[in-house]
Image 1 (spheres, rainbow, N blue to C red):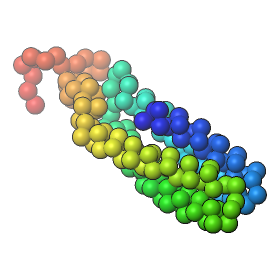
Image 2: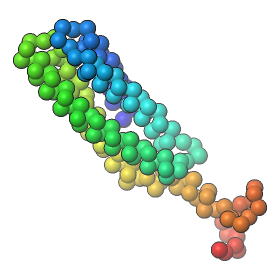
Image 3: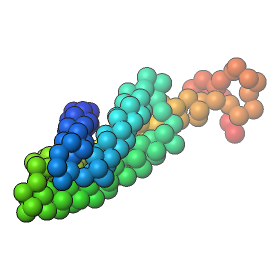
Image 4: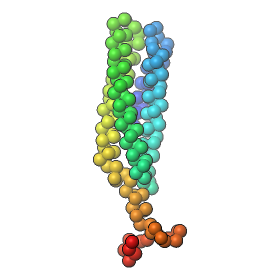
Length: 158
């Protein structure tokens, strides 16, 4: 996921620059490329913090990661078609932006698949990502004084 995120950022910036500077290039496609790159960067940072957190994460954060991954997968599905259709039109009109649009369409396809698979993996392992915080919370006594915790094996019962 991180590799394709980096690849998406590089190709997005190249595509945005190419579409902005070439004859017949679309400013809207330049914006879409940069915007998708910014969202992917944010997802990569949040995802890395969530997955690689030493203290574990709460289930709310894992749920946000799942929702963002599904949203990114859908975004890249739509962008894939937009870039392929406009790349086809650029080819018909012999515009210079054809290669950049088709390349971005391919990257969007790969990102659509990768983020979809990644989201499925997170869904299937969401309990493991949130277990460490839940186990800490489950070991805390609800009526214990602040700063004290129940230890496994105590005779305390609810």
